Amino acid sequence: MSQSDVLTVSREVILVTLELSLPILLFGLVAGVLVSIFQAVTSIQEFTLTFVPKLLAVVLALMIFGSWMLTTLVNFMVTTYQHMPPITH
Image 1 (tube, rainbow, N blue to C red):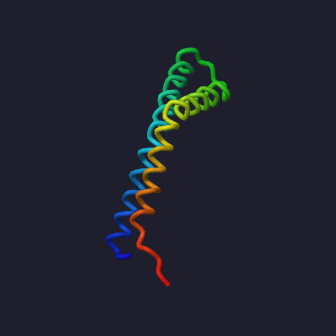
Image 2 (cartoon, rainbow, N blue to C red):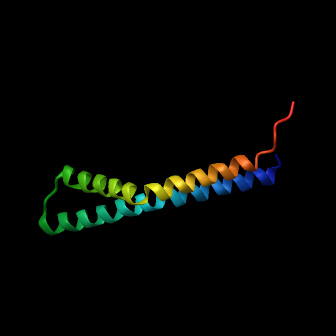
Image 3 (spheres, helix red, strand yellow):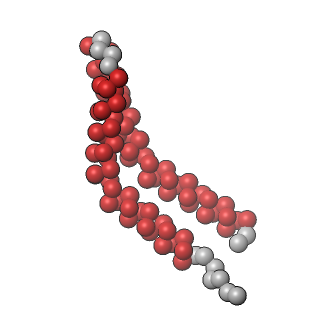
């Protein structure tokens, strides 16, 4: 495996990781911003008020995007294994 092959695989790994984590991070970010606005408006400073909505948003994102994420990951792994050079003894 040459240096360019390693760099190509590394780049693909980083891109797939970003692609898979982005929906979950965006849902958590939106939930966090909405809860922060709510806390600023009502002056309620409760830890569980920030944690529970973010957790629910992440679970919702996993429910919505879970099958797509699994398909993307499986396709990446299949492609990776198909491009591995055959091991001969």
